[in-house]
Length: 343
Image 1: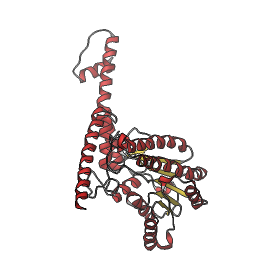
Image 2: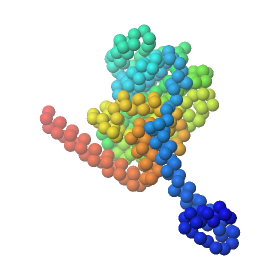
Image 3: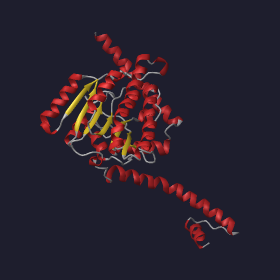
Image 4: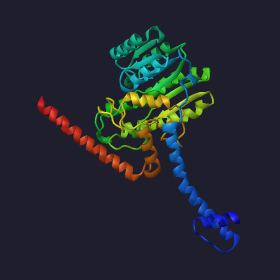
């Protein structure tokens, strides 16, 4: 009773009556206090995760000299993962569509690190979903200690477009590259990780999947699939010592985003990859979402705020997303018209 009385006094509420009535009032006050304190504690967790607490050392997943496989490795984020992991002493398996770009990247890494870092490359078009390509990849990795897998290959729409106007081939390519390729490559690599009882699987997701994005409906759905699949996979592989992390992000200066200038809200690939590798195991802005991170600081703060206070699938957020992408589409069409007139 003394505790109830102190709680009532602290908030300026005084209730006379039976112990039952006082108990009910105390329960209501306690629930209110928890409701107020919970977001504050969550925000503190976000700040600690993004700015203070270190991530797990990559050596936990495999020693220097083991292998990292990176899809979509020839440009942008994938290329930066390759450079960063080479700098940390990992041999590289580089997989992407364009052989000349893979060869150039492998040559650059060889020039910089010499025989210390080995590279293997395979050019394959993931949109084709050819068994022979995956069989060749299986042969390439056979017998190698692949301790890190970066599922980075991805495709979005050429410009924002409503679902009913999305070209059939574009729709198919997005699903094959974003979903099927990720599944098949991961399926090749996980048995080795399970047998060694260690490994790290990073899958690049997107706010486009975390938050429904009209006019990018197929892309948005494909990235939402990766979130659900990766989270389920993380639970399955945890008992085998394999860490799975779905990496959420907003815009980055890549060919896919068509943004060239970086800013506080839009990092370049090098800045983003540094955050990812430095915060393994830290949720960042993805607090409360299992086996998921939003490691880049501004993206993490945005993810946390939108999820907690706006709602990932709220009418307001979906409508705002639609308006933004309708504007992007209009600008893209006007630009295409201007370029057509120049020809």
